[in-house]
Length: 210
Image 1: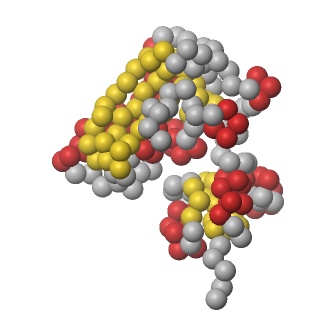
Image 2: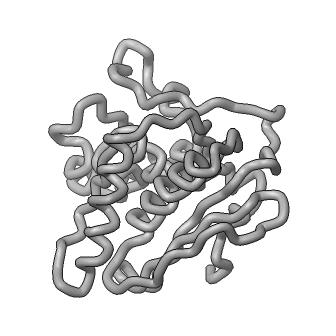
């Protein structure tokens, strides 16, 4: 029997680790600049997903790369910043998100919960809300998210969710449309940073429900 491989999608419809080629293919087929690679074990795949795809894919095959996120403060988190995160009970399920001041965990905004959402959507909305919050305050602080999906969706100015719209989650899709509209109509200078959970622990905005 052929050994099952695990597939890392760094850049595609929904980045992540997949346990079959068919599942991986659904995320990368037809996606410009998709970045993906197979690994022999689940552990190798998850470890690779936390790293830059350039460590595993030769430059010759790397076209249209995702915007490289800056590494600041000597590899330590910048406490004078804000952090955002989402929580979802079920998938889809009851979704909410919030933003905090990283150093003290003081809550700056909290939205939801709303029915029939997903964690990915919540992470996207939280990041856009944080960008709008900082621009309104004319604040130079950077913003942390622990979601590669959210960061990529914000860069593309599009929420790439596969969730179906229905009456129960209409309010969520209204929020998505508002967020996408804000991204299209506004420029911002905020530095978006990836929170490195494996090195620093849970992001300060985490809801603590794991």
